[in-house]
Every structure is written in C-alpha cells, then in structure tokens.
Image (cartoon, one colour):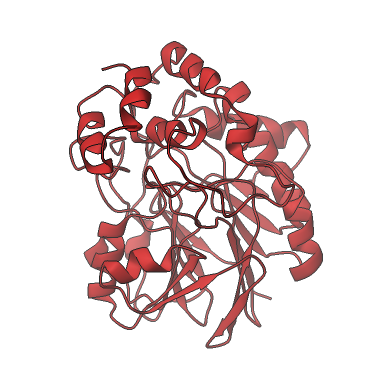
Length: 355
C-alpha cells in the first residue's frame, strides 16, 4: 500500500482498521504522525496554535510530505557511545543530571528527583512491531531508577509520551506527580494514572520548593486521526532557590525562548534538542538544527546547556553522529567553550551548577 492510498483509505476506514493497515506498510511512526497532521483528511478542528499563530500544516503541504517520503535516505544504524557513570548515584545523591536517551533526562535539583519525557519502550510507536526502533537501550532501566517525585511531559508525540513507560513509572512511584500539557491528562487518567496535572502556557505549580512553569515552543501535537493539535506542547522551566533548569521538549526556532528568559530569567542548566532536522526544507518549522540549538541557549541566557533528541531513534535523514559534530563546529565558529553546550553520553553523570 502506498502512502497516497493510505490517505484515501483513512477517510473511510475506522481508526482501528487504518492503524492495522499502516502497521504492515513501509512507513515509520514519525512519518505517519506528519502525514496525519498535514493531510487534513479527518474532520478535526485545531484547538492550539503556536505563539506566532502558525501551525505545521499551514507551512507544509501533503505534496511536500510525499516528496520527502519518496526521496528520503535512511541513515546507517549505528550506536553512539554510552557510559555507566550513573552507577555512582545513591538514593540520597543531589544536584545531578543523567541523559537516559532521546529527550529523557533524570534530574535532581536538590529538592526533587525529576524525569523528563520518559520513553523506555523499544519503539517510539503505538505498535510493538512497527515504528522507529531504538538504536540504544535506555542508559538506566526503569527498575534501576531512583525514586521519582515528578515526571514532566512536553507533548504527546510517541517519542515523548510513551504510555507504557508512564504506567510502569506510576506503578513503581505511586506518589509521583505527572505534569502534562493541556489536553493530555485524559490520556493518562484512562491508563490508570491519577496523579496528573495539566497546563496551559505560562501556568505554574509549586511542588515542595520548586516552581514548574510550562512555556511555549514552536511545535505541534497528534497521536492519531482525530486529535490534531487538540493538546498543547511546550517546555518546562523548573526553578528552586538553588538552581533553575529548563527542558525545551521538541521545537523549531522561534522568539519563544527570548520571551521565556524575559518572564522567568535565565536557566543555569538547559536541555535542548539537537537532532531530527534533516531535510531542512521540510523539518525546519518544528525541529531545530544544531546551530539553532546553540542560538536557543544564547536566547535563554543559559549558563550551561546539553543536547538531547538525537542518537536514540532514526526519525529523520541526518547521519546519527552528525548533530554532535555540528555542535562542535558551531561552538568553534562562535569561539565558545566546549563546556558551554555539551553532548553528554547516555548514562554520563553530570553535576549541576548550584547557586
């Protein structure tokens, strides 16, 4: 079945049947998500747009998707180097960050232990037998994690909101609080997760001595045929007396980061996506390239930044190792220290800068 045939069939088949059909064709889950978004083949009115009042489907056409789909190259499946530094952690350890993989970071800010965009499944997909398959295992398994206080989710794409992982985390940490964008709470409640709070942009919540603020980024949302932009997307600003931390989620370059700095101040530590950007003519609206990642760090006024959203799944066309190389090149071009924007190994133990 071709993608075009899938578009036609989707208008007359049930969601369940359509998913089954797509599970047996040669199309990745990421491509499917984009296809669902831009084709407008399901009667779904938008609920949310970006701060500049644009949306992904207004910037990209079905024709462009098909051009990418049938001309794209598949990068070679290689594994990035990992570390077992995290094994030095003890339950009482504080002020650290560990990249688990993709957009998942394990954090402790001295007040809370936090997990961002937890994805521990083998695939970033609604299917167990289809969709992007991990290149590397999570650097820390679910069972090896310390007790988690707060779990943040940036948006509902399958490589960021993995229900299977969230259910496991809820079982292991029954008192943990889940913070999600507006529109996603019902998905977690349906899965038996009750400790959930959802947020619009700039809404905030204080947990212990840490204030969590949901901030705008330039992206979109969809998990199926009828929920295009029905839930929000964003980043998380986590501020305590000792340290400010920022997780950008998934984003294209926009003025949102200067606005975040204006409203909330500059983070001491920022996690910013660096992969998922090629080809630029199709991906630029919703995925930054490495030079833009560094620009976001500068817009935020971040003291230290680290990369994420690379080296874990093949979602786009760039070579697996290219994001790290381009970060190094851009830092050199800008005469910035390598420590200003790091690309840590999964599992590497990072000590957070404390005020």
